[in-house]
Image (cartoon, rainbow, N blue to C red):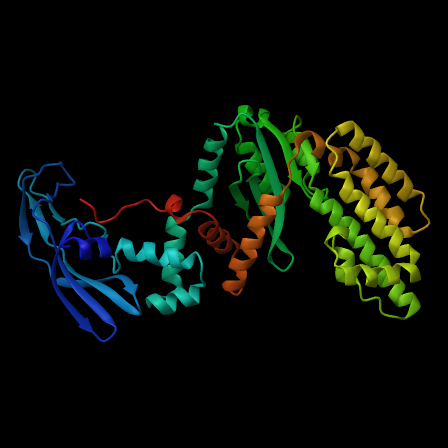
Length: 409
């Protein structure tokens, strides 16, 4: 039981002295164990003597049940008996001149991973700038990218996922993942060609050669650059975006009919749903509107046919089915269906690559759901660098970001 308090407070390298409670503060006086020996930072000698006694000072260490925990420590001035240099005593887990312990920074960042700066600041009685400095000191996107690129060297086949997410309004950041291993590689500060080019140029030729597939959305933003830098990789249009494109055209038909007929067609949610997920009441409701507006039925059927396309397992059958669907849509008199048919034709190769690589951007989209939650809890961000570091802190296990420098002997 004697080790319970040191283990709880993570001060295993110290002896516990008097404990005081003042209002909402718990003050624990600690002293170094006699087994710990200081070493001269100049010559490495262990022959050390005390040069001047230090004063007792309080260092913020953490919080527990609305009580702030302070450590009361003193740092002596020591002199090396060999080289006669004077230096400050080393304290485990407390840097020189620091007002807080390493444990306090760790606890604050761990709390910051799931909460806003304001909430963490109010709980730990610390300012925004101090929290931001701790975040910048311990979460480095560049270092993360370097470590993840080293990790890619161990994979025989690499399948990348690229997807943009909104940072602030129309300002976007780009998330890059390994979709089969479900690993976040990096978050780039913009969707611009320059940032992506820099990332791709950091990949060694042997890593580039092992990139077999790239999952992305239906945009031309990065297509040419990816084809240039990774010519052997198959670019796959994520089937979620293909089906979303069909739903978008379906909803356009519905809104156009509403405007033309000057009447409400309240089946938006029903049209978005898969046909097998509709309840009996929804089926009756949707069929009533299909009788009134055959155009809706035609486009809805096309959307469901595209969904069924992805259930095929043979690439040859998938190609024949896609060509058939695209031809039928382009031959329709419905403008939105014609447009959808042209889109499928333009992206035919990339859509069919799915049946070769069998990759999706589902993992990347899942990360973006967490990113939206982090941004919402933080009430938005103004600085993109802070946003990226906050996302990395919230998305990755905290143990990977923190060097475990506890107060252990």
